[in-house]
Image (cartoon, rainbow, N blue to C red; front, side, top):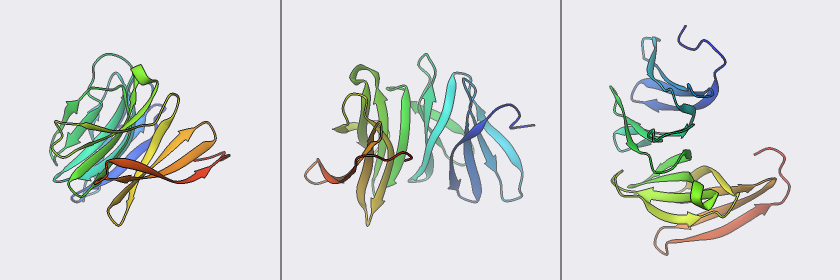
Length: 183
């Protein structure tokens, strides 16, 4: 019973010939793997982590964004095909990760700002702040179109779409939905 209890779906990704998926459960989220032989295995069961929010391939690794309930648990971890290892614990929630070209983008809740910040990294050790969403504003999704990064800022029912210009180091607003009930 690898997924017994009240786990909910968190995120998924494909790593080589394996399907990875993460769960949401108060204080006990899991990262699981289904191999090519249809074998289900728990890669990591986290006490102190309540959600597996997002997964993305970056170079040879799958990067996984987590939510921690307390302490200094790593909220960015990587899976290299055999082991999961944590590498960043700067912020308590990593809502989204997305790889575009040589950059990994992450959307992280910064407690002192009471809002999310879009970061990018090329080496997984140095993270540069790209965009501060503002108080009570969250970045739940990062994507790309033809290699250009896009992200969505949510504030209650208002959703703003931005394009990040890597050369100008600036976010350009694209569209605003004033009253979305589901995003």
